[in-house]
Image (cartoon, rainbow, N blue to C red):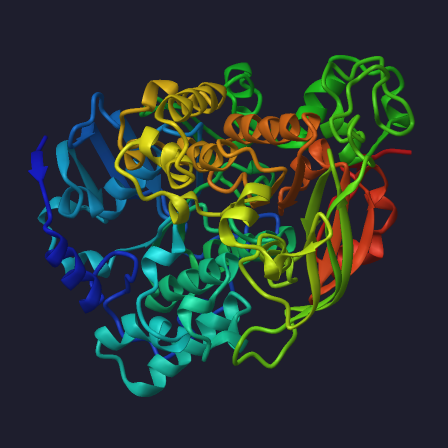
Length: 608
């Protein structure tokens, strides 16, 4: 039966729901289990071949969705439409697609946020275990599904990590020992036990993402809906998180629905993959069939390098048994690989975007000298004896695991933090002695979350803000704003409110607010976070163009494909120290340092 809804929740109601812990981000089974809440004590069942399979695998659908459409308030077109989806108990489903495809909106529908919390027009129904979500009360919904949102900071509201993870089980009125057990087990599961007493507002992006996942785990739902649960993690952290999620699926029988753009991490785990585009499901198949579809490969998603290589080999590389490719060699090639492979893996004549630009080496524009830094009330050094110099025209990548000190170093260069010892210099001048306006004329800082630097009521006003502070003539402001908006593909959005833009568009808007006052140095903290593959390439192309014009880019990134493709230089960090400072083309010669720093640009394929 089709149901039409037009709902609008007042902010106060939403806040109250959050404060009572009955929102879907904290879901739980109704029963009180004294055993391990995450993995069962019993052994997993064995398949016919002896392999472990889900103990609760069933042909019955745990989720059934029939959605004609959902349209947001003031939306010009449906965010999703014509959805016909069944998910069976014990499946591991991966949803992917370009930005704006409707992936997050579908997650909201499957979890009950739509229609209960989000304003809009909804035609359709979703059932979980045969129960229509639109007819359930919050406590009932909380017993069915756990949702991890794309922005983890939206799900942390207590003072400490311990309080946040315990909050959900406490609202279930579990006994103290069970609450303590769930707290310890869920934090251990994501490797964050040592952060139990940490203040939530002081967590890094990757730490916050793991803590929110532990909050969901502590509630022990049967269905997990995870919207890019590892987007802010380093490569090793991503692998660990997905391996643990797969354990939930395989050993505990949990049903998993994951939204993800980097599909290579999930190839070993997914039982099924769904491609969305323009609000519709375009492909729903097993991984092998999914990646055999030419339409999928041409859809603009980030196809795993192994899949790309398979298709290349099928086209007929001469003597493939002798082929030896590094991951760097694959991602740097711009054209067909067939018939043009050298031992290094780099095709002849291909433009290497990570090659040193024509401006590199002209002069040093920024440096840090024996820099040490310690956060207030912290017992460890965030930076230790760091000395680096950055040259004009150079794109440098800071890489390493979460907590390695990359963001702390970047903020020193932007003047957002002051050294405990040592100095940070711009053009030979101590940053600590420069005024805010003078420093911003030289250095622009692109935050990992673009919403941290967006606050005006229109796209035009956002970009014009810094120029107005400098009291430039109105005509000059108009010309410069129009020019940078046109360059970033945002001119048509000039009168729109920034929060009506997609995540990728807001990222470009944040970049526009920096480029408009023409700094010589751009510090970018994870510029590809939250972007689809096309948007990532477009953003990195803009940074490369900035370098080609003589600018300097210092980029923090966990995306090794983009580092290998674009960065001239890679700086590997761990424990607040610089382990390696090398041209990116030579990064794979430092495997010991990469392993220590939780960076894994390992060889993609090596057949002898």
